[in-house]
Length: 78
Image (cartoon, rainbow, N blue to C red; front, side):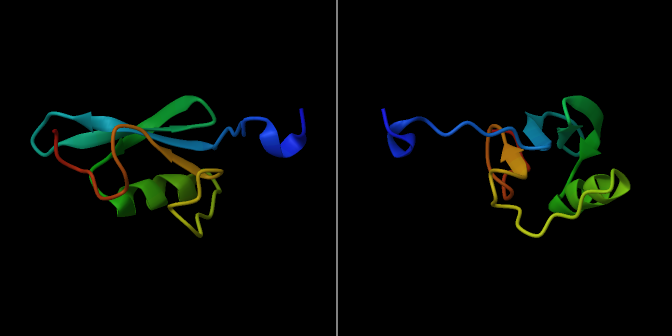
């Protein structure tokens, strides 16, 4: 099997989990596998990342951020 035919495996440092019900709704943020906070907006994700010394240049880069249960625009329960 060639390298191009093999599946791509990546482990982003930041995981933003699915929307949790609440007032207002929020998403759990994990960095390096550790729960580090809750985010209510994209700005919250960037602030938490900065607190951990991570500068995010592209929120759509799957090598940096993994959005579970929606993308960066999903902030209300489905």
